[in-house]
Image (cartoon, rainbow, N blue to C red; front, side, top):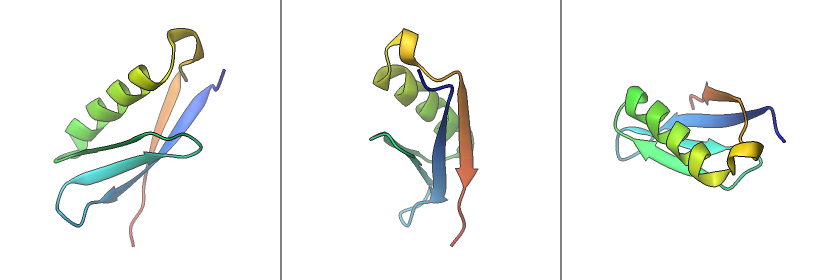
Length: 64
């Protein structure tokens, strides 16, 4: 079981934010950072079985 998962977050060209997990095929997007945090939590919950779910989720903002 992974103890943590890291998402790279960047501003979307269309507006809002995009988050992509490192090492997993998880991608989500939202209009605000608050919404993005909820979307990431929901995506992690849907992607992993409860026993395998990482306990720590990091969001790392990337600026170009």
